[in-house]
Image (cartoon, rainbow, N blue to C red):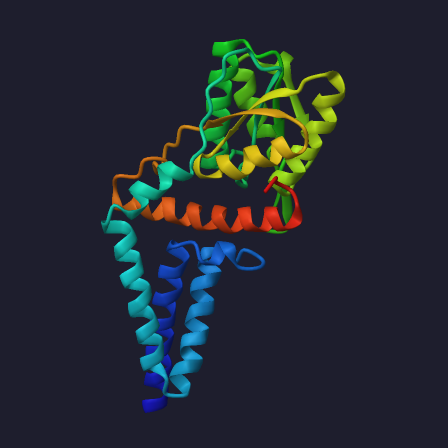
Length: 265
């Protein structure tokens, strides 16, 4: 009975640690990008194994450290200071040749996820306001429950509502920002379209725009308006945590892209 109690205690502590770590985005920077629910399950399993060995104190200590970190991020102005400094936003004086909206993901009902829709709506607004002649998006494919869902339907619906179909181009399936930059370069640069607006989420702007510049574009960086959390100017605990999650991912992503030579030093 005592052993079973230790295992259950360890599993609960491990699940708590996995949940807090996932909230902070730790799982998103690990190889394979383990989903939040799976990360909590992994935490529970690891905690149960530690409990079996009688090491629940170690798990509890790690949980305490994770919670202190979480509260420091959520309830101090740390991210309110760091986030605006990381976001890149450019001004432009001439009309660009094209506008590129970066993709995110898609749901099983064919709708774009919130991040993708935020980006697309901002891109549509800019394309209409400034009469930008070419409007480009990228196709993503997401495996869900044994099927593969693409962003085509969700993008087509939204672009059609804005009456931009005649200006719209789609580059083929992409898995990274680097893929998007290369495919858009193949589409636009041979046609002489070298000045481009890149629309993406605020915390992604620095890496995304540097990636497009590295393949030959003159880039104007435009952060998308966000509807769930404000990661650009976070002023609530939830937005600060969301900003930290994106900031951690982008910092490490920039290191990776520099090591691979995908952005200029």
